[in-house]
Structure formats: structure tokens, C-alpha cells
Image (cartoon, rainbow, N blue to C red):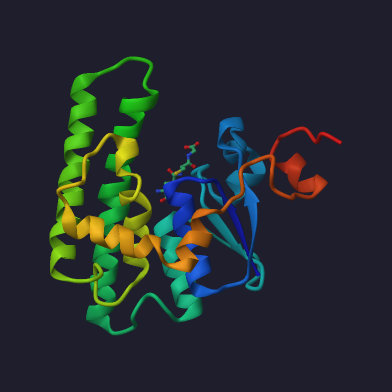
Length: 223
Ligand SMILES: N[C@@H](CCC(=O)N[C@@H](CS)C(=O)NCC(=O)O)C(=O)O
């Protein structure tokens, strides 16, 4: 059994979508990011970076994995799917996975911070991160006009990029013109495993957690 510590964000969804696609048995502990649960000592033992997602493979001596890209690779290798073993095919998938991890995620994340959360509106920063995010989404679009998926068959590279690209409007980005990207987002959105994965975790407060788990999140138990 895999234990997934997560929250309803693009990086969290990468892990839950992959677990659903790979049909690996897992249980979820929702982490309340607003309460800073991810910075508590017990969580930092699992991920010194204090962020979600994290998985713990309970059937493998409680081996913990942090960084969503590393989680995707671990899960794909465990299940033997969504990541080819042939050296070149595998490299193509990893190239588009790294493209997401080093580019799309960080840039869209910063666009969101400056557009939505910064106490001061800094037009230069908003424009810089939106422009770079749109440039990266355009690179995806060009690839997706040529091929159905990013790297051969549907893979963890599609899952990683999809979980961010689908949130483009939240970053204030207009992607109507990116027809290859839009076609691919629509296509992946319809996959049953993706629909299930995007619904995880249940909204905090609505999920069924044990008393110990609720206390571990730092929230008070209302009896
Ligand atoms: N590079 C990390 C980024 C993880 C990340 O930024 N997680 C966010 C949610 S999407 C988080 O935990 N934020 C809470 C915080 O920074 O305290 C990964 O891909 O796993």
C-alpha cells in the first residue's frame, strides 16, 4: 500500500492521477497547507523541503519519496507502465517530464504568486512570469500539433504537464489559440483515472480521517 500526503494543487494531482492511472492501491492523507502542516517536524522527516506531494511505500520498508517528478518515476517503475524501458523512448519521456519540473511548474507557480497572492501588484513580475509560462505552453502546443502525446504513448510526461497546463486560466493565461494543447487537455481530461485523480484529496474537513491523523495535521478534532 502507498500512503499519499497531498493537497488539491497541480503538483499534488500529478501523484493522485498517476496512482489512479497505474491502479496502485493507496490511501490519502490530506495536508492542510494553509495551516502549515507541511512544515511540521513529522512531515519534514518525510520531505525536508516541507511541500506536498509525498508518498510512503509501506510495502517497501516505508520508503518515502518527495518531489512530484521523482514520485512519478518511482510509481511508473513500480507498476511497469507509463515510462518505457527502451533508452531513447525513456529519455524522451524524461525530457518532457524535466521540462515540466524545471519550467512549466515553477513559472506558472510564480505567475500565480504575483498575480494572485503578492501583497503588492508588481506589473513587471506578473508580465515576466506570464510571458515565460505562455512561451513554455506554446512549446508544448507545437509538440502536440505534431503528435498525440508528448513523447510517444501516453506517459508520466503527459500527466505532469497536463496537471499544470489545465490550470492556465488561473495564471491569467489565454490558451485559446494553442489548438494542439487544447485538444490534448480535452482528451486527457476525459480519462476516467484522471477524473478520479483530480478529485483527490477530498476537500479538507470532508474527508474521513482517524483521530490520530486529524491531530497529525495540526487541526482540532470537533467531536
Ligand atoms: N518541486 C516540488 C514542488 C512542490 C510544491 O511546490 N508544492 C506546493 C503545492 S503545489 C506546496 O506544498 N506548497 C506549500 C508550501 O510551500 O509550504 C514538487 O514538484 O513536488
